[in-house]
Amino acid sequence: MALITREYARDHLIHLLVLAALAIYPAVYHVLTNGGAPTGMVALLPRVETMVAVLYFGLFAMSFDFISGYTGYLSFGHAAFYGTGAYFVVLVANGKVPLLAPETPFIWLLVLAGVLAAVLALVIGTFSFRLTGVYFAMITLGFAQVLYVFMRDWEYLGANPRDGIAVTGLTEGFRIGVPGVDSLSVAIGQLAGEPIDLFGSTLGASTVSYYAVGLVVVVCYIAMQRIIHSPFGRVMIAIRENEARARAIGYNTFYYKLGAFSMSAFFAGVAGGLFAGFRRSVTPENGYYFLVTGDALLASIIGGFGTLAGPLYGRLFDEGLREFLSKSGSGGGLLVFLRDSLGHPAMETVVIGGMTVGELVETFLNGHAPLYVGIVFVLFVLYVPNGMVGTVRDRLGGTCAKQLPAWLSDRLTAIVTAIRERVSGVRH
Picture 1 (cartoon, rainbow, N blue to C red):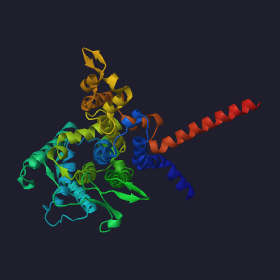
Picture 2 (spheres, helix red, strand yellow):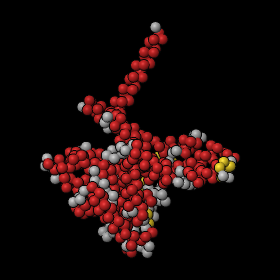
Picture 3 (cartoon, rainbow, N blue to C red):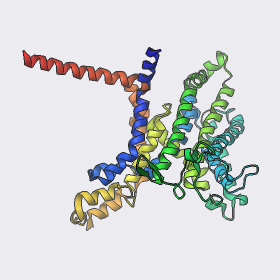
């Protein structure tokens, strides 16, 4: 038992380190931004509020990778499930869903949002999985666009459904925790979140939302990991590698694909519910539009297809770069970094064609994050096709969780041996 426990801990060391890093991030960010840390370091750190968005959208990107990265079927219409979860939560909160009261615990709303998205996936998948390749991708995109147009013009949502809907039925934030136990639940949200006192310190609304949303994301990630490492997950990978061979050995690949599709939709629906719970609003553009799936695809390519955790890191990279190059320089950013580093006189120095350094930054760098994210995307496709996590896996010769501890142990052993040899040589 001790051996199993030790081996299990070693195999999950990286997961524990990542969780620890995420857990201390708000405290580190607060210390660095208020303790006189180097400007360059602070400029590269996303705000805690941005990290909340990274978490819930990262869950959506992971759900996209769950079906696309592990079965090889690109779901270009995956936003249909994200938007369904988001709209469901807001509609229930506004009392527009029969049989469900606006005061329904948020945790149950997340589960129901996932179930509703999974049922929708069963309907879409029944038709879509009769096709393969680009045809499958296009038909899922078509279904998502149908839902996008429908929600944009559905008058039941309000007077201006094109502008989306906001939560009007609840005055306090959605609560994540144990339903019915206020002491074990916390409110989340940009506008309705609440600070809490913990061990003599006050955690702001954004920090509380970060931990609460992060807890849901971690639980969903563990669930997806367990599915992938189950016999069902092995069939998913077999379909990706050679579907004809999987069918030849007796697997009904249609039902396995449909099951995987509905599972991925469930987690996408939960992600959409978290998005709506935090933002307290949703529009057709940030719920059902095809570019929502495009952002998940971007995160998956940067982070690594078929890695599950990779899309989360890819989204973090994407959001961090966008915030760094934001026009306002909020949360640090390039503009604030250059002003603090170069000073006002340097920013006003004329360099080219009568333009100052500050004007050059405004023209070519600051506020053009989508352009540079696009360039990074192209570079990743050309030179890092397996993404960040996938490339590390290739270098290590296996998954990061299993191979990185051994790699670090070997390097540490080599360093200790070299030090001992040097010390021994000095003595002699």
